[in-house]
Image (cartoon, rainbow, N blue to C red; front, top):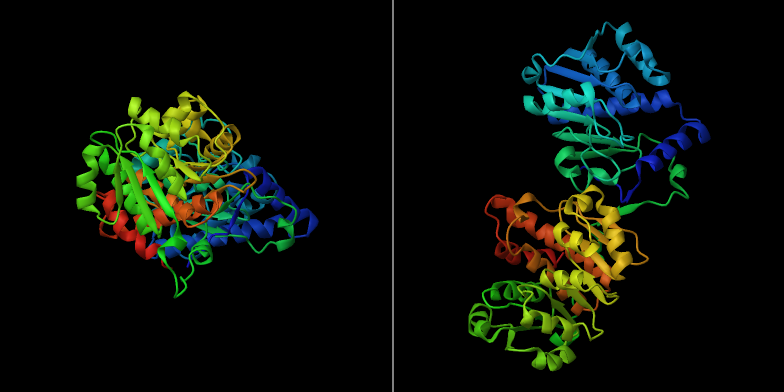
Amino acid sequence: MNTLPEYLYTPAQVQELDRRAIQDHGLPGLSLMERAGRRGWEVLLKHWPHVRRLRVLCGGGNNGGDGYVVARLARRAGLGVRLQALSDPDRLNGDAATVARRFQEEGGQIESWDPTGLADEDVVVDALLGTGLDRPVEGRYREALQALKAAGVPVLAIDVPSGLNAGTGAVMGEAVEAHCTVTFIGLKPGLLTGAGPQCAGTLYFDDLGVPPEIYQDMAPVAGLCRDELLRRCLGPRPAHAHKGQFGHALVIGGDLGMGGAARMAGEAAGRTGAGLVSVATRPAHVAALLAARPELMVHGLDSAEGLAPLLEKATAWALGPGLGQGPWGRALWEAALRTEHPCVLDADALNLLAADPRPCPNALLTPHPGEAARLLGVTPAEVQADRLAAADALVERYRGAVVLKGAGSVIAAPGALPRLVTAGNPGMASGGMGDVLTGVVLGLLAQGLSAVEAAELGALVHARAADRAARAGERGLLAGDVLMALRAEVNP
């Protein structure tokens, strides 16, 4: 089983960890490079056990040095290996120069970059650009990345797919989309959010046997949402349990023609374990919602006047699914925000908040990148360029917890270490998924979890349920399929 470590570090921090291992603990840098190359070779054999033709693309730094080690081991195993250097090998320094010389001493030939026959290789090893990349890829490196993408050949990336910003998950002009990536010493957040999951493929981690002491006093930049959270927060219920112990969740939304959004959020809250679930929606939707899910208590509201008694009874509430931004939705938004109950804001509630910003310390915001951009007054591209920074900015501006949705969802809250969710799949790119997440988080808040716990656990449960539902295929996955899978995930 490929287990990733819990904590994530910036590329600069990983460089410091590497320095500590070498200078403070006497671990030779050459040994680390040999170990990295060997681990890359082992991962390559794991994924492509019948490989015969291998091309290794090497850059000019230590990342390229790892590639020289992979190439040497592959030649020893009898593979047909072509190693192409995009930087002059005579200008290599230190350990990278040593492993390049070893490769040549064992009969290996170093070629210049040539895309000819690239598509005919069984596998290509990407050892071009390391974790320090912070500017757009240019020149022959960009040409090589474009050629590699066009060839459609399987790729193993060493440490980080070339062209991916290992700190942010942004593509720096052009990036490799690898089948798998093996990364070392410290797990980098850019591999797990933004474009990272698409570029990295299956991700492997190896600490290369560095002393655990090097991580002391190094504060991680983020952590992963772990499955242990499920067992800690969702233990067995007592035999004498009753519905009053598990909270009363209230969903507010469903303007004309959008009642389904409120219904899905309400059902998700119930499936997650809320004791009681009410829905405040347009009167026109009451009959349909009761027919579809009679366990919901559905209240028809023509105005915000009838909302107060519903809010008074609720343990936690959610505003936004199908709310709209018209007079009806705006009136409900204003009325709900006067209360101090724990709450979830999503969809049009976020758009209304963006138009009238205010601190919401009791709220848990669940924006997708477009909504986050409006909340911050930037573009979606700027949000995606550094998702951790965007989540932190949302917390700073609105004072509440945040689930920034997308590949590698980011959970952030005041005073808490940001967390990333590695579960989930592209099938979730369909209507209603956000409404289900809203209901999941609401159900957890109603059961007494803190905003941070509800955000982390809710995002994890939602993504795991989507993965369970996607076993039949990602294309065509509906939000209702995820609803049906929730129950198994909240009963670990």
